Length: 221
Picture (cartoon, rainbow, N blue to C red):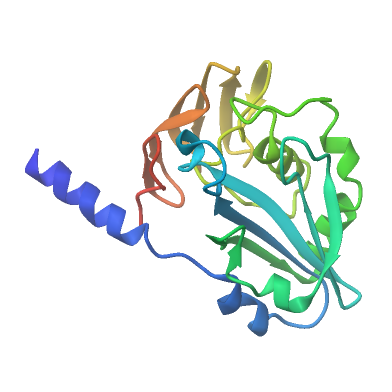
């Protein structure tokens, strides 16, 4: 028991390391770029949502930066131009912004071609913070439709696995999954073994290795 507790504490300490936009944006090469970002739900939302993450995209094409996502339940797809300083800002909605993935070069160009048609991925007609569909559902659909991405969203990106019913390959293509709004499961080379209860994951992810527990960030190196 003590060994398990020690492992959990060590994994939890390593999970505190994050990549900030100010670390990434100034070092980006010339040409097209896509960033996958996340932040925690702001304080003005109900307290029980504060553990959850909100996922969105930012990309640079022809020297101009754009932001794409579904910012609130009363907002349809948000797709607007931003300044370079906004892309490099470590705060949004008074929350710390974390960079989940970075694409450059030909991979970024392929992803941008998909991001330019966001309506394909939001046809539900309604937004539900829990269990979905929501901003994370939208982001996960974009990722699944774009081979250039190998991104795995945060386990606290509630709604990422939302589907009325889905049986097939996992988002990485390395395993199989069964998903419903209430219960789901994944078994894959990257995803590991996961059980999803009301969109909250419990399990062991293989790559990157992590312990997944509800309400906590992924516990891993």
